[in-house]
Amino acid sequence: MLGNADIARKLNEIRTLMELAGEPFYKFMAYERAATAVENAAPVSQLIASGELQKLPGIGKSIAATIAELCDAGSCSLLSDLYARFPPTIFELLSVSGIGTKTAAILFEQYGIGSVEDLEAAIEAGNLAGAPRMGPKTLDNIRRGILAYRGRTHRTPLAAARVIAEETIDYLRTRVPLDRISLAGSLRRAETTVGDIDIVCTSVDAPSVIQTFVAWDRARAVLADGPTKGTIWLDDGLQIDLRVLPDELYGNLLQHFTGSREHNIQLREDAVRKGLRVSENGILELETGRTIICRTEPEVYEVLGMEYIPPELRSGSGELEAARARTLPQLIELSDVRGDFHMHSTWSDGRNELEEMIAAAASRGYEYHSMSDHSQSRGWIGLSPDDLLSQRPIIAQLSKKHSITTLCSSEVDIRADGSLDYDDETLAQLDIVVGSVHSAMRQSRDEMTRRLIRACENPYLNIIGHPTGRMIEISPGYEFDYDAVFAAAARTGTALEIDGQGKRLDLPAALARRAKDFGVVFTVDSDAHDVKGLEGVALAIGQARRAWLTRKEILNTWPLEEVRAFVQRKREVR
DNA sequence: GCCGTTTTCGGCCCGACTGTTTTCAGTCG
Image (cartoon, rainbow, N blue to C red; front, side, top):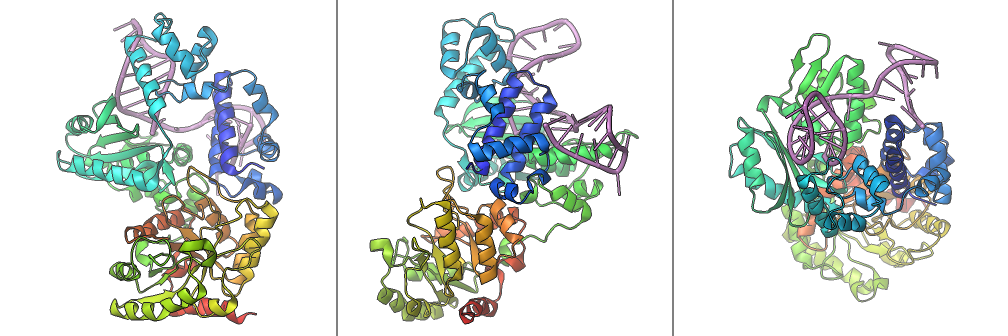
């Protein structure tokens, strides 16, 4: 059974191949919009089972049938027919910067070029010299595009991209006069990974800002270099786009470049129905010819009859409707967090001493936190029951010294059968317990579902750590019946973690949004293995916001006595 | 192919930059 990411990828393949095959624009675009909807949706298998698939925006009868076929069989007749017409390597051709579907179609149909290798050979042999719209500059750009294609790796994880973006902003700030500057695009929306970095700023002298930008010594190549827009590639192939406009347009500019694409399409389609044309240059009233310009982003949404939509919600999956109805949730913020339930010390596999972690938690201003080193079956990194209990007086002393409440905890392994890795007597002496799956991750969907539900039913398990086990860009995690586990978590009073390690960010936002409907309580934790790792809570907050979560749904924004009551309630129900 | 507070047909977001063009097509976000 295919997961959402795979289904979305196949829908995008259908979209691309349809365009190559000359299908009408709005027909193949429908598949792209459907792919976006699937990316942001709850698990498709679950939606099919509950008859909710066609409720997704942009998914009608025909595409729903295609999705059902894909989900079930892994492929579909539509895609098989398209595969028969084009070689699989056509997608690599299209991922060369500068080659779009029009060019690829001509290359394939008129020159028999169906792969990057073919393309390179044709250019070197001079076979493309007379091709339409293929002058010397275009051929140079394609050569450069091929090099970049070969040198490129994955999408960039959010945390790494944020560091580079901040460096770029620092570089510009210190060298050229700016008014306001901000991250935009997928980075500002806190997407898990980003394909490029978007930055917007305002200045009275846009051209000199752009010139400064493209002259940066870290730029390996300059792709665009206009009066208001510049694009560069860094050494590792990461692309940075910068757009500069006058300060009075900052609101329009930021809104435009924060996207997402689908959010903007929906927003502008709605605006057109009101006689308005929305772009980064303002909001044009078609009837009067007057342009409304907005200094701030909330003004843009206000002009369009909506409350402000936080960037993390801008995925085109229902946020515009809610904003019109003024029913958006008050999203959790970093400042709401009172503590962090998941961190490690050198007692298990952490890199900082117990005291360093406790001091660091205190210096972040937390009221409480817990130390959750690994449990015994993790081998040399795990703590025996005796070791675990011997932490308690040490923690009490350090906790007092650093004026913070440190809860004694453990990240206990959830064993293959769903039991926990310490006995009840040991667990009963902890203040709060995190349980995670670290072994037997290839169990069947049914086994994993039973395992997690049994864990939820354990009266001592309070939080399921990184619930899906996914590793970004590496593994989608283990399979289980999400709805069944969410229901069990809600029923038993077991919180689900949003783990803030850059490589995890787990639960994924779309699943957390689904779980919210079951009445689940969440935690936003760092899962830090060193002092610096505590910053991961900010990443977890980004994902929680993308899941539409509010403070009241997140355990570690609650006062300590309510956290203790949450733990106690579960222990009493036996 | 999808969709509806101009509804079941006729629409469907918007603009910058580039290179090859004498007015624009293609790509990108």
